[in-house]
Image (cartoon, rainbow, N blue to C red; front, side):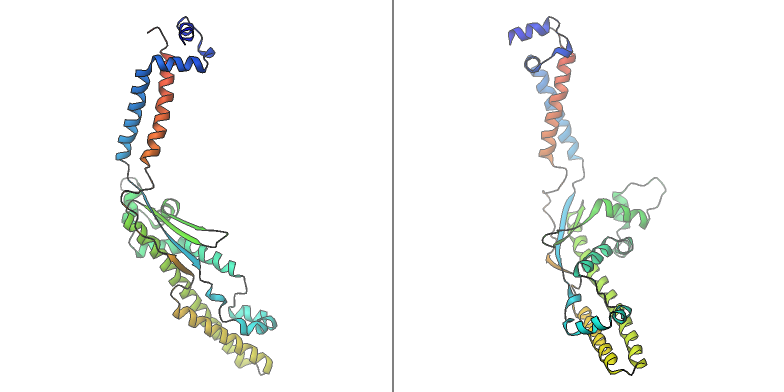
Length: 287
């Protein structure tokens, strides 16, 4: 080590530095290195004290799949009068398509803006999202911010579990919003299903009155029965689209997802060490 140090002191070029030389430099300037690392870590941790803590709450649910219940008795009618069934409002798609529709509604701008407006979240989101002086926040801006930085919707392809996740500075609000989003989604999908079945029953009643063919009337009657059953399910099933298996609960005040001070301390230590090494190389001279 002494020979390495002497070679450095005698004018070795910067480009010729190897690991042994760098180690010697760090050792010779150990007080400088220690000071830089400590100052870097202290500055980072001090800055983290002024960062707004962000908490995460999540509601976990499974697709309710009530659309497929009670329809086994009308399979033959659907096969025989598929076109009529489609006109009447029967969705002949797979259960997966129902789930995709449900999640698309949850992510949609119309649904999200209605949630922000009805829950009076605009002033809260305005405090979080910076606007220029004199500018008023809009629902469009609030939707963009909410969809990008606050809400996350994910579906596990293997288990089918749907996770509605909220990240926010208030842990209680984070849990409340996650739960309310799922509740409003179920109410929205129920209302859509009821309106759809009402329209379908009205259409089928007209078709039934317009035909005298016995087989056709029997098939239409089975289709009407299925729609009435579907409407009944929508009326009595609160968790119509998503069935909650784990409601969101407020996380502990001492458990934010960011800032992670331990992670910041490790990163700042590495950055400080690199900066100290750079200083040692630049300031290389006899000591």
